[in-house]
Image 1 (cartoon, rainbow, N blue to C red):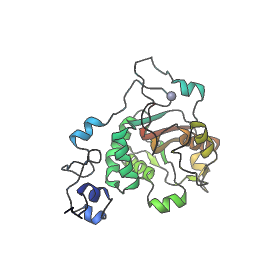
Image 2 (cartoon, rainbow, N blue to C red; image 1 turned 60 degrees about the vertical axis):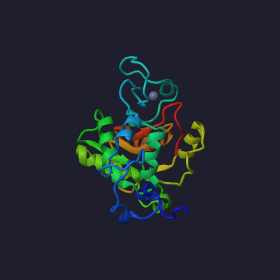
Image 3 (tube, rainbow, N blue to C red; image 1 turned 120 degrees about the vertical axis):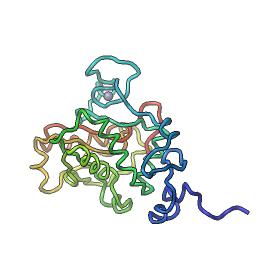
Image 4 (cartoon, protein in one colour; image 1 turned 90 degrees about the vertical axis):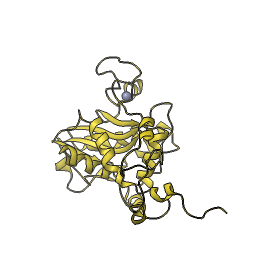
Length: 257
Ligand SMILES: [Zn+2]
């Protein structure tokens, strides 16, 4: 007879049972679902399947290059249509392995992963972040925030701020309108979808003026969302806007979530 008990991986990932139940069970690797010794970490086979991004890469958007082309070289996409942020950096390639990580973090309450992701991101963004940087999470629309109960980008930004002593701007940037999910949209449609989606919170203008802002998000797909947010901040007088994400799509990889 088939067991009616939920699978261990489902329980720990939050697909069955709640956080209290999770605390009683051995932790599992968020990539491979194997049991591991410490919660909020990746197991040995998970490590080998993740692709961490290192130089050489596009000087602007950070997409990895197959070969070293010299300093300050940008990819064809950035040359053809420069994004509104100065520099973007990502910790890992968005592929099947990191997809599992991010889906668990974003949709299954696996918030215990935030410190590990923040360490990866602080390393990927080490040339951008200093104590004067203002880490600004990409906001969710209030309706989406109510449904998800937490903004994964804010969790990441808060942990990175703790580690690097950069400043944290929790709510200066706001989502003015709810935008449909970008998943099935072309690059052009994504740009149109998020155009004008962001604004500044009341009283934020003085804090944004001349600031070095680093937008924090989970995934960079085409860069349309980050570019739209950067445009809003630049129009408000920000001195410089960069972006730091956990994972980025690399052409030929899997699509967005
Ligand atoms: Zn580029």
